[in-house]
Each structure stands twice: as C-alpha cells, then as structure tokens.
Image (cartoon, rainbow, N blue to C red; front, top):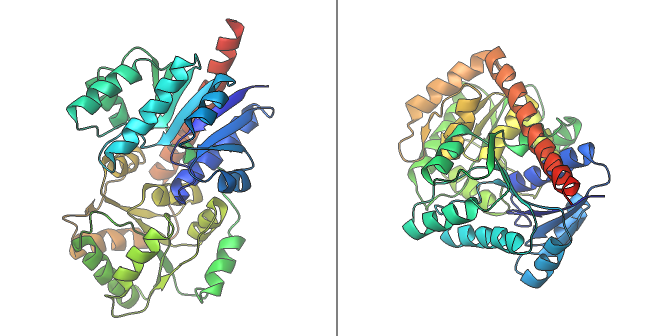
Length: 368
C-alpha cells in the first residue's frame, strides 16, 4: 500500500479545485486501488465527507509533518498554487509545505501545476531554490514550462501534461436537468450559462456581461443562467450583474458538488466563462465555450484546444463578445472536430500525471 499526501487549495468551497482533487483521487485510485490519500485542507471534515479520504488542517504543521514523514510522496497541486498575483502569502505557504516534505525526506511532485506569474524578486529566488529541490514536475501547459525556464528550475524531470480535471469522467445530465427544473429552466428554449468571478472590483466586465445577457435573451431568444464555481463569492458577483439587466436571468445560489456542476454544464447550449474550470467542465461535457481572460491560465487552456479568448476583463466589448457568441451559436451543441481531437489528447495527458506519480513511488521503493 502506498501513502500520498496532497497539498492544494482544498476545503475553500472552490468548485474548480474540488474538481481537481476529485479527478486526482479518481485516477490515482484507478491505477492503485490500495493507495492511501491524505489531503491538507482548510476544512478537513468537509474534505473527508466530500471525497472519502483522510484530511488534516492546513495550518497544523505538526500533524502535516507527521503525515509527510509516514508517506511515500507529497503531491503539490493541481492548480495555480505557485504564483503571487492573486495572493503573495499563499505562494510562501505552498513553498513551505514543499520545503517541509524535503526536510523530512519525503519525495515531492508538483502535479499539473500552472506556474506563475511570480513577480517579486525574493519570491522568484525562493521559487528557484525550492523548485530545484523537488523530485518531479508536471505542468498543465507550455506557458508554465516557460515560467520554469525563466526561473532556472531545471534539476527535476519536467513534463508538460494537462489540467487534472480533464481526466475526470463525464457525468449523466439528469442531475443537472433536475436542478435546472427547480429554477424553472426547462423547456424548448436554448440555455446559455455564464460563470463569473469578482476581480479587483472592476466594473467594466460586469457591465458588458449585463448587456450581453440582455442580447442573448432578445436576439437569440435564449435563457441565461449564472453558475457559481466559488461559493458564495460568485453568487454575489452574478447578482451584481443581473441587477443591471433589463431582462430576467437566473442566478444559481446554492453550493454544488463537482458532479452536479458537470451535469448542469452538460445541459447548456453554450458556456461563457471567466473561471478556468467552468471552461474545462464545458470541455469535459462537450459544450461549446467562450472564455474571458483575467489570468494567463485562461489563454493557455483555450490555446491548447485551438481557441482564443474573446478578450480580457479590462477591454472586452459587447460587439466582440456577440460576434463570438453568434459564431458559436451556429454550431449549436457541437464542439468542432479540432476541439474534440485536442481535448482527447489533453485527457490522455491529464491521466499521465497520475501515472508519473505512481511510477515515482515505485522507483523510490525499489531503491530502498
């Protein structure tokens, strides 16, 4: 039996990160049904209940050290943990867990990480030092590989793979259909989903999305639903947007599991996303998508499936957004063949993260 400790942004009610954890557990368990996984979490009880694994509190370094000492591998990831744009303090926290593991002699893998941006000079030096201590790195896109090169991190083996969520299995649409029905969102009319987040309290992109919501209702004769990936923060942002619309739109104001959100997305005719994992959910469920960028990770993902962002939150326009929506609308529920082919390749790449993790454990055990 192998033991793995997983460090990431877990227990914070972020659907994208919880989906990453669910996908990692699913694939690792497929490869090794006896694997024992412990998650470092901000809410251990919720993590235990949600994912069926052991969990320890993210600030309890004594307990974390005990788990690391008795484990075969620390997995750090997935997600954009190693960056200092959304938070400077979190970068140092995640690096401290990496350093603790190495101090205790536990092998470390950066798992499908989205690296950077790392802007501070001291932060870059610290990341260079810590990054060259780890045993294996997989990154979810070529942009992250370039960040590692610029940080002169070259001692571990490095592989470009894909976001862990892309390896998750599609789900049945019935659950999502029932949720939408409870919000009077059933019927013949097409349904467009929008996933938003608050970003620096900017108003421009919210105004644009309010106008786009009205145009979808009037010009496409469709309905609009806002779905929260970070609860309850995304609900509040969505309500700000809907308060500025002339026509009605629905804001889903509950907290949903990964399977429920995937199922909801599967019932959409189009998804417009600011949140990365909302876009990835659309890819998993075969739903056309349009991405608005606030971070390089959005651009990197869309590029990997042969698409471009429609604009960033600072300069997006109604005309550009509607042109993109009209183009996608012609295809209705179908992703084009190129998107499907690229997504299939990314799914295989996402699965390889877990294969590399299991191989690392096996190679270390053989050396004992």
